[in-house]
Length: 252
Ligand SMILES: [Zn+2]
Image 1 (spheres, protein in one colour):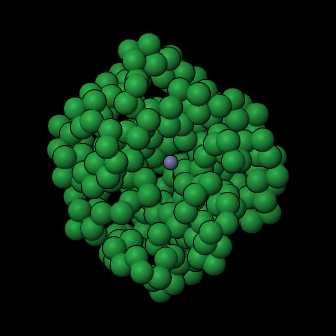
Image 2: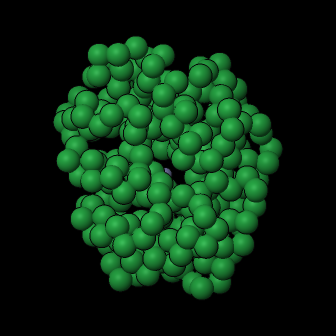
């Protein structure tokens, strides 16, 4: 059994036919998943999906790529949604300096949502790109725990996040031929701190690159980690499954 910690069944590419994608996931042994919000409407949908299906929970949050126009009202909606019993984390939130959203706005929206997580005692799902050092500093100054999602930093940096109490989640790039860093992370981060995810509908893993990614495909991430660590895929599936239950505060 697999736990996919980061799917966007709430995205327009997957939402209308989510029944089919969830059925595929179940056929592949992916019995649990977390649908992750990235703005107000996707957060609302994540909560709705979590109430529709067994084995699915939600996170709510505004991502750094979607925060340029974020108002205090939007943040108040996220905070209200976070009270729902099916919401297990605040996210995806963080910093992304790869694109042009103003950095001070990103930091402000990130910090305000970190405060919600603190108040509700929830973990956070971090989206971070080209901003690992600054993200680390913001996390270090809080006592929050959570997940570095679709982690693309170095293995050394990963170990620093782990010391803060974070899990490292790997997605499609670990299967890509030219992606060296995620492979080093898979090899050097202990299995008891790793998670698997798809971050669908984009970034389909090898051998499905270029197709619409879907939750079932997290199996390929587990297979690649197993191969890189020289252990069985059953071990990867079972340990990452229990890691996910741990960080989201869920029962078996
Ligand atoms: Zn995502």
